[in-house]
Amino acid sequence: MSVLAEVKDLSKSFDDLLILDRIDLSIEQGEIVVVLGPSGSGKSTLLRCLNFLEMPEKGKIRIADQQVNVEKISQKEILKLRRKTAFVFQNYALFKNKTALENITEALIVVKGINKSKATERAKKILADVGLSDKENAWPSALSGGQQQRIGIGRAMALDADLMLFDEPTSALDPEKVHEVLDLMQQLAEQRRTMIVVTHEIPFARKVADRILFMDGGRIVEQGTPEQVLDNPQDPRTKDFLRRVL
Ligand code: ADP
Ligand code: MG
Image (cartoon, rainbow, N blue to C red; front, top):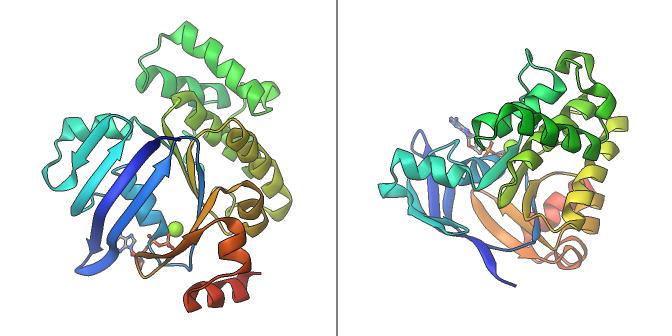
């Protein structure tokens, strides 16, 4: 296996409060990494710094062939690095005034520079992959949360990025809609799309993750296989967290 992404000594503060504390992380090509941790531990901030939705203060990031020192990064490098990742948001973040199909074609046209007819053709294939061919012309407001999130994931798939980042993709959903989104993510995992998933869905993590990271206080305090972290946690903070969620 080869290393797809590397993070070295990554730090981020908000209002003088250290939120990410010298994170080191290395992700293999095709690896499925699940991030667990209590609220406020820095999970979202970590994903958002990898995509430069938040600007880290210090550290180095490499994704595929693009390596940057965040202290010296240019706007051009930010855009280039951002295109190595595709982000799936908790609240879907769809364009409300665009149809399901247009939400995906827009990504292909704007981000990938693909012409409209080719983009439409590809977007239709993706809608079929996420099981929503019949919703092509639907507005997001007419779709269930689960359907909206499948569009959100379809949009991320369309970008065909090296690394997919999921930030609690099912936590805004009604309980009965959670599985349709997790099933789709499991399919992507089976295709060995490299991904980092922040989630509280422990059974999903157990089934799908190659590695689980446990974060607390802006640090990765423990990591290992699902068996290691879930069944035999070593750090008291991991033990305490699992006692509360399991
Ligand atoms: P998690 O996703 O693990 O719940 P976050 O990464 O969202 O944690 O947040 C970690 C900490 O950073 C929290 O204390 C949160 O209040 C703080 N934080 C996150 N985003 C901001 C922001 N934009 N401005 C100020 N503080 C923030
Ligand atoms: Mg979060």
